[in-house]
Amino acid sequence: MGGGYVTTLLLLVCISGLIYLLVRRPRSQRSHLPPGPTPLPFLGNVLQLKVEGMLNSLREVEQGLLFSNGERWWQLRRFSLAALQDLGTGQRSVEKQIQDEAQRLVEEFKKTKGLPFDPTFFLSRSASSVICSIVFGQRFDYADKSFLDLLVKTNQVFVRLSSTWGQLYERFSWIMRFLPGPHKQIFQDLEDINSFILERIKANQVSLDRDNPRDFIDCFLLQMEKEILNPATEFHLRNLVLTAFNLFFVGTETVSSTLRYGLLILLKHPEVEEKMTQEIDRVIGRSRMPAVEDRSRMPYTNAVIHEIQRFSDVIPMNLPHALTRDTHFRGYTIPKGTEVFPVLSSVLRDPSRFRDPERFNPMRFLDEQGQFKANEASMPFSTGKRSCVGQELARMELFIFLTAILQNFTLKCPVPPRDIDLRLRGAGFAHVPPCYQLCAVPWGGGSRAQEELPKDRPQGTAGAMKGPNPAT
Image (cartoon, rainbow, N blue to C red):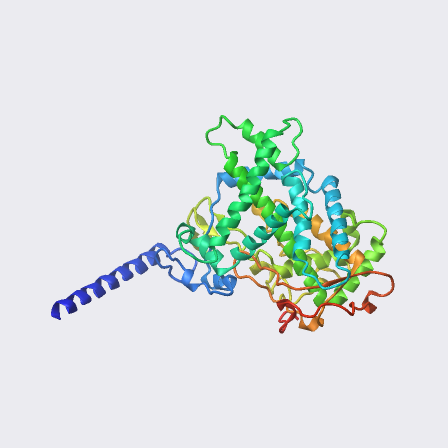
């Protein structure tokens, strides 16, 4: 009895001493770091992160960790920017592809005959087809089973990375790979997507025309050949797969998610839709497809799209950036190699930059004369050297797709607009648009505000159509 008591006491003393040393040491090491709770060994501050509201938890923790950067990032980014430019991104050739996809999207909407439908994969197919044309050199038919399966897996990865399980996987991938849980499907989906990309690369290798690169993969393969004798080259097969995946994944999900949020917002605010359609009628009409050059003459539509991007805040935490040297910031020292999240939400919803930021209001992007007014705090694509390489392409898509839809349809909701819930979902990597249904009623003349929903529409609505709306 006495021996057991002494052993227990010694264990408690040892454990207490170990905890003291582990807690005390980080404090001394972090004396010049920005303030925040003391991290635990191995776990860091993960216990301070809430199951729901990862972003708000990170704001409380005030530190950012994840991912890596460096020379690899710099070389691949510089190459990607040049290759995308050579392939016509931001130019007429790509604009024509977007217009063609917008016309196909309109035809797909018409097939719904004004009945309620979930727009998720309608929008994903259109956005993905554009980026597929650039990365893989071809678009895929909307009925292509392998393409649809790829979109489903891409959407699942996007959603799961935004869950708590996904965040744990990102932070502790070295151990999470061996633990059960929903995150396990991320591995399989990523493997399947990368296998698809690898097959496309192999096909390009067989048919490569060195004088006429067809797509991003061809451009990368040619760069691989140029640097084949460089032992430190970043242009090898693995990086090609990863870079092609990044372009495909981001080019599909961020654009389609923004459009999905945008349509939901317009269902909530039919008066905004009405003003947009009036501007579309005045500037474009109904006899031709919208073009990028129309945007400068459509300040209200431009303002709405900017406000949709600000309000939807699709990638709230941005991507992590690693410091290349010790950095002194506001009296603190952040050591080289520290991974920092430049949280975009802190800017996009900054009340000092956007009055009443939780309210959707396109007028904040218009001046007193009704002309478009830029705001330097509007940075959905990030800013500086780490801004999105595909932002010009995304801007073109958002404008053409959205205006083409409103040019041809009146958007109707199966429930009253007051019941639509605009609260953002997702807690980690992204804000995932809620599931909902809409009715795209073909415009047949007269006032859009007087058009009614079909009498035989199916009953029932999705979760996004229920509950109070804190955004109004």
